Image (cartoon, rainbow, N blue to C red; front, side, top):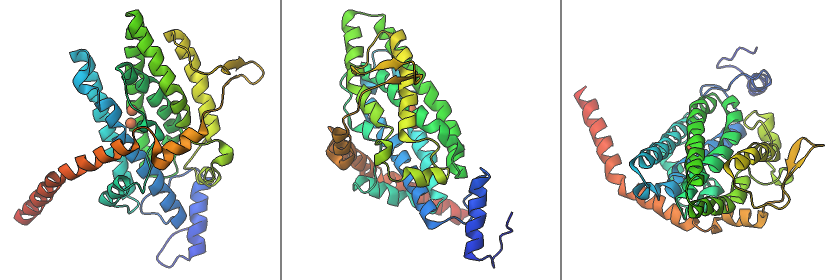
Length: 317
Ligand SMILES: [Fe+2]
Ligand SMILES: [Fe+2]
């Protein structure tokens, strides 16, 4: 191990960093890191935080219309968890020197992205179940490997987040199971929701590997552990038996078991649609960002009051 002091030369810092990564040890906020690593981590964590916060909107849409007190309590708890995930992640980004107000500003002005999935509308209550099952399910596939992220604060935040995501997935699946035991029109609602969300859920893993230019560097740095296509395959393999148990089908004529590969084959997502949504032209992009901006503007007095209170308390001490 290199011993780091004030006199350490840049190349020694770089080799200490490389050694830490190679030994699968963690980079901590006080450690030297290459600027590109810091920037990549801020971008990755901020995008993730924004996704948690924007992701409250599609389901929040159903809180006042949940069909029973029990369903309302479950949905409220789930949406509040997502707010908590956003908060841990903004805090993790702050350990890299990012400023939370600046990150929010970038989000509401379209200069930082969030997951494409949250730009689709939630048209029926079955969408709440399908989001829990498929969207939180895809998030789990993406996020479990991130518990081993080379950046310490992010990896540790992901451990807790993943535990809560698994509750989210189960509450969604349980909701759908209940609807599938109901009437024909409830079963139709579930199937229609699955039809609408299946392809967007597959797009959550990002573009195909050969169109994902940052993957190689991110894997070398241990901030990404599997490629987009590997994770997408894992998600398909996991979801098909769950769909069979539930009694729904996925809208993909090419979906079938491939005994030779030991995996399901599946069709190609509509990547033109994916890029259109990523570039801001999905069904709900403008609405999501406008809503986030108005919530932020309306909360200005709360932030001012909290700062004034903190200053007053500090003065008293
Ligand atoms: Fe979450
Ligand atoms: Fe979740």
